[in-house]
Image (cartoon, rainbow, N blue to C red):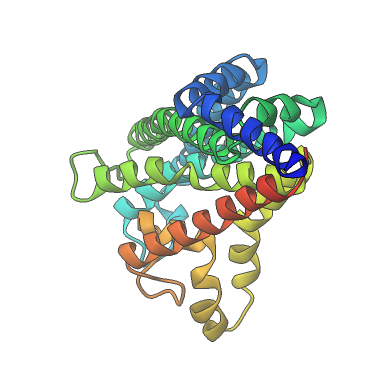
Amino acid sequence: MTTATATAAPRERAARASSSAPGLGAALRAEWTKLWSLRSTYVVLALSVLIGAGMSALISLAVGVGGEEEIPAGVDPAAQALAMAQIGPDLAVIVFVVLAGGFSAGEYATGLIRLTLGVGPRRWRPLAAKAAVLSGVVLAAGLVVVLAAFLASQAVLDAYGMATVGLGDDGVLRKVLLQAATLPVFPLTALALGFLLRGTAAAITTAIAVMWLPAIIGALLPDWVRENVVRYTPGTAVGNVVGTTAAASPTHMDPWPAAAVVAAWLALSLGAALWSLSRRDA
């Protein structure tokens, strides 16, 4: 009887601690405060706009100075103008990845992860809170980045008398909004990798490799590999969601199946992060 009571006592204490632990709302407020208490957050957001708008404007300037001969034969000038607006945000996502990697893995370096997990025994809550806060910030900042890059690039092209596109043109606003909506994909991947690898540099490097390497290496591979393997990698799937992949490319996929591939990759990475949080000590 005494043994049974002694065994039940820790379980009762754990149950009371779990029931009295702060809920998801408190976790969201805590992660929001953590993110905005970092000076690097403000630096990253400023850099994202500078890189996004600046790189699109510089590339448009190079094309404008070169004239029409800078546009490859057979390429629609309007499509080229939109593509130049999208290059800057594609590069700016790197700084969001840096922010995300530090947001999760940084807590292991400082030891703050012990407090984060100690406050709430349900370990899915800090992961969900971090993912929600990061997604909201990147979505808001990403929309600014994408619009700034679009306006800057089209202004430069127009100054040189090159073909431009407007947000009211057919399909342009949709692609701009889709690019902004998909910007959190790789920061969320970096967030998950931070919990898995427990190192900021490792999480950032791996996320960038996942983002860029398949496309770089895939260009050197046979078409059947690109069609059956590279097409289903995260970066390629995101490009198909936005609509930046040519229909004739072996890696082309319709937007909805591509969105399903992106969702599957996010579920896999965040699920692995949750497993790591649940099974491994801080």
